Picture 1: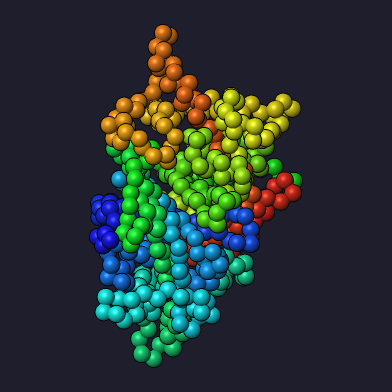
Picture 2: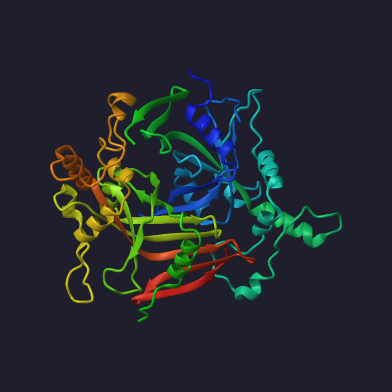
Amino acid sequence: MQVIAPRWKAALEKALAAHPKETVTQLASIDPSTPVPHVRSIIFRSFVEPEGNPSRPLLLATTDVRTPKTAQMIANPHVQLVWWMDGSQEQYRISGTASIVPAPGQSLHKNFTHSLRTPQGTKFDWEAKRLEVFRNMSPFMKASWCRPVPGSRLEGGQEEARKWPVRLEEPKPGDEEGKRLWEMSLANFALVVIEPHDVDYVELGIVPNRRTRFWRKDGGWDEEELVP
Amino acid sequence: MQVIAPRWKAALEKALAAHPKETVTQLASIDPSTPVPHVRSIIFRSFVEPEGNPSRPLLLATTDVRTPKTAQMIANPHVQLVWWMDGSQEQYRISGTASIVPAPGQSLHKNFTHSLRTPQGTKFDWEAKRLEVFRNMSPFMKASWCRPVPGSRLEGGQEEARKWPVRLEEPKPGDEEGKRLWEMSLANFALVVIEPHDVDYVELGIVPNRRTRFWRKDGGWDEEELVP
């Protein structure tokens, strides 16, 4: 069993180190009730290896738990992420399964079954991870999770929208309104965890162009060269 | 009936004029045989209004007709295109139906049923459009359609790949090898035509953020403000 980090991850990390602002990726999912694909931009936050196993890296992103994509990914966890890295002229297409990690009190939490063993044999503490990622989000992002349901009709128009908080900082003791907003934001904040099983890596910045497919096999990763 | 260009198109054209290099978009499709979404980067080439009706703009992209996405889109024409415009901090999610316009001699051509009336009452000449777009492609792109089937196993490895043409120019009279490659490229070249019916437009560059949904209705476009 190959327990080293897959080569596609090393390539992605190298490209990200050279172009650290290129964290916008696109995530496709299927709403099982209609034959229509859905795709939206999401920000890649980091890799996480909850098992301490470098051959099994998970990708972390975040979302408002009230968006349609969370219900789509709970109903059909098959997703594909595409990452066009303009600076290096590379495309990564990452097929895998997605899990949503909502707040423990959120009604969708019952659908979260991702349980992983840490190297110490204990279970990975996903709620601690969620809180850690939340704290590192910008005040602007934190404020965005205090709005009405994303994608719902904007009642009251722009006049109403101007009342939404723009920045949200951790509340000081006694700041009741700040505390209410902080808790609302944290309750709507969820992690999106993607476990990759197949990666299509295209390098357009070199001649001849290269394309490599990687897939999980026997606990490690296998690879094959494809025609670009 | 509103026969003016939809407002989302004007916004997109304004963003493109300010950031003309941001033509990379991501196209999601579904392979009806598996419950797995597919998404890849494609280059937006232009709008086309074959009916001369500004309220019905189609989006043009190109592909190698041998890629899996052409079969996917023929089997299930529902697609979603997502376009993150970094320079203007805008996202356009365009839902619609896709058609493939292959070479007339290509076996997939029988699936191409898109027939539109021009303002003169004649049929739109899609093959003329395909040839026009092909001529405007770079010599590098033209050469890319002379490779073995995209996504197939690379037989012969990089040694074989180094034999592929890198640039392809229109052949001079008597250049038999150039003529053979030109014809191969043109035979593999196809248009991807997307007819939008629903557009989700998010503006993250302004405070408060804005989100607008547009959808085709009664031959024109209706719109509604949503919560971002």
